[in-house]
Length: 174
Image 1 (cartoon, rainbow, N blue to C red):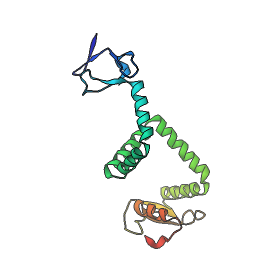
Image 2: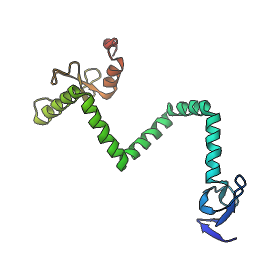
Image 3: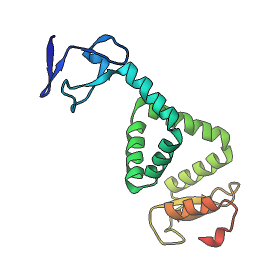
Image 4: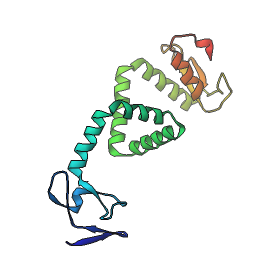
């Protein structure tokens, strides 16, 4: 049996998979630093079958734990890191452009109002004001009526999202 050295672990070039009974190349096994050989006991194909079966049998519990984790501070931070990393890839950039284009086609009145505000700010006809609720300086323009694109309320992200989440309910509850 030949061996190759990967970092400080000596890894065999071939290995026997007990699940399918085949002798396969080392590249067909996942790396497992805890194993004496440095490779997982089952080949990648067999491991995939086992993992899919486990997921199928335990789907509700796995999803519950995943949703629970995603609501934690650590989970939200991790999700945001993943989103940022994805947005920098070619596929992420392409999807962002595609989604923006679809939104503009779906909501032309909103897109026009957003463009009018951006142009007015750039030209100096409209000046950003502090948040109307808390006085924060990092603000967004909120339109009560999109047919009046320059009639906006200035709100920070927190209060803008809160106002949007009410969507027609008691908007004075800010």
